[in-house]
Length: 617
Image 1: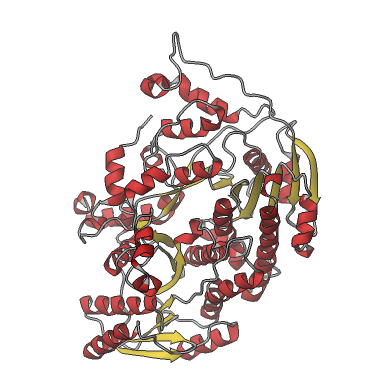
Image 2: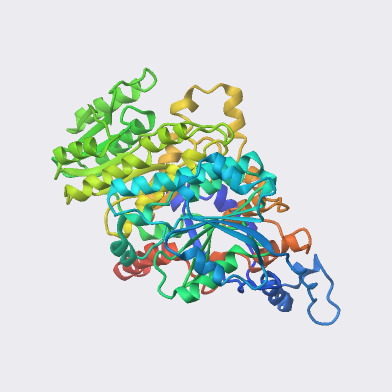
């Protein structure tokens, strides 16, 4: 059983030279889905006990680990018998595909008490949700509407279904917030949201993105609904062997000891957990970013904003390095007004572009409807070579004060326009389109007061995964906190210091762009760019007494080493199990869905082409 090399990971997380040559700290962090099998849950609720006992039985490989808990005299120690779990009452907001009914037909014996299937979820408002939950609440609430399909694969139908699902979940979260102590467990089921298989995406189409935002909503809800443990589960879109899958899904819902400790994908091919990872191994894909040819066009939405202008300067730098000219960059916005703070950057862009023979302009464009987006895309077809969707608005508010109107405002600026662009590109062929970036945010992994923003950005990630699986360009960049542009540039010193003393401090433009370049080298559909404060992160992830704390430390355990479990209490069994196994990336034969799909084939191509030189790199 491998143990963490704490020093190596600590250095990599905070100080490793990113990419080996550009002199900046590690700034790029993809998310990997690692295989982690656990026994099926049962009537006794001791599936986790069995897995940990197996580790204990071989503890002599790493005997000092279990010395913290028990001193074996003769042979391995025996874990105490698991207490019989009580039957749990369950409220199910059911799906219309029949998944939930099949799951409950395969629930562990003796674990389900009273249950109620809700078939009219979309007709319920917050009061209706509150009435269903009642003053006593339920042991488990299952929200499975993310499994439902839209009427068709059209953008309009996907948006309509997504709106129904999202508003229903919004009403549920608001109802739970009013009485958090009434319900301890919330399960959210989706299907195909993180699927990598191109065959599935080509067969099923855009409907696979319809619940992409649920992952982000869950991550912020997990922070704000502190009394509610949230278990996110994504499964196969169309299971090849459903009779084998239903017991696995039922097992995940009724797990004793690890419920809510991970975001999980439960598939016919196995059980997988989400982990943030360093980008260096993924950069071995060595993907190049190529500038447009003469006559081609790059379009940037939110073009009068600070981040769009940062991208403009970066694009000109890349063009200079690649000796590219003769193309144009259109900075798109509805107002075309550039603030006084952003005017110096725009002047620099104009001056440099003129010298390089590149056309730049602030242009009027409204992407708030499919018709307006079609008009722009059609008028520039077939010359579009790149699109950057950087537009967006913030309507932050804690759940207790969040209104549906604030949600709509964020959606209308983020994932809905991205869908409109996707729809237009499907109708108007631009064969030389090299890149389509959608600017997401690290808020997809949870941020207080950003339930709406977290979800909308998570949907952007889903669009990127879907397009890439279909062989079309799209990349979602989950940005952290830019420190030299936007609100941060005018922030008072005290407020800025508070952020800089946090786990993800502000980064400079140079650092942010180095993270972008590292991510582009991976060729992945999505990745995060942020700066880490290792000492603060180490301190934040040490607690493991609550499910929420365990979720955070599990998600980051590949980049931030965690301490062993403080005791062998049952609530620490999963922590004991995970830390005993050590790093997932160092486990022999451990499947990595993202790496195996996107990186391994590119690495194999590079090794074949460059041989020993590439292996040394």
